[in-house]
Image 1 (tube, one colour):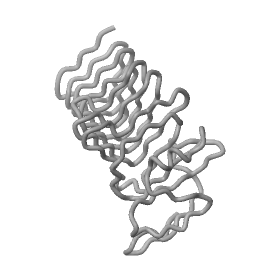
Image 2 (image 1 turned 120 degrees about the vertical axis):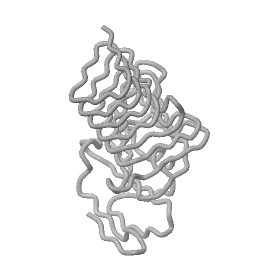
Image 3 (image 1 turned 180 degrees about the vertical axis):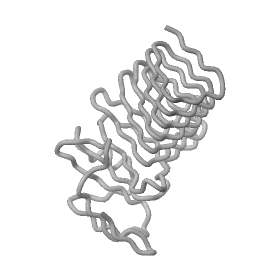
Length: 220
């Protein structure tokens, strides 16, 4: 729960993590960039940048709570962290005008994103090392024509996300998301209740209750 005034959040009590965050013996780190916030955070340190919180996070079991702001950072993680925006109504923005916003180099586990916008400018918003897995809930992705990419054999899952650009990831699952670009997958792509504005094509695909406004090509 939180208490707030017109000057910003004054207290945060973390009693449980949102669905989709990490589980088990969770450690929560808080990022508060703006000086207008005067948080009283229980059992957690406060960091001024997301990168600093990622560095401080343990190898597993950490979620990073982002207070509402715009963070200009280029992030890389090798840890299966959760990046959780404080408010589901107003997504926290992480931007980088000329570089990839978030690089998922996590060899094991899943990187979880919730209530955030990754704004990539001229580069991809999100990219994956081989085998990396990302799950996104109520997020937005903007940037290059291929806005979500991979080195090889990565997995990307979205729920209620707005994706502006192509998703070029080996395995994709989309539920109630809007994709306004080309979504291609080497192995599988399942989309439930999605609006696909651009072409979607993949092998071994399953689409449920979807609306397509341009070419749908399924092979395999």
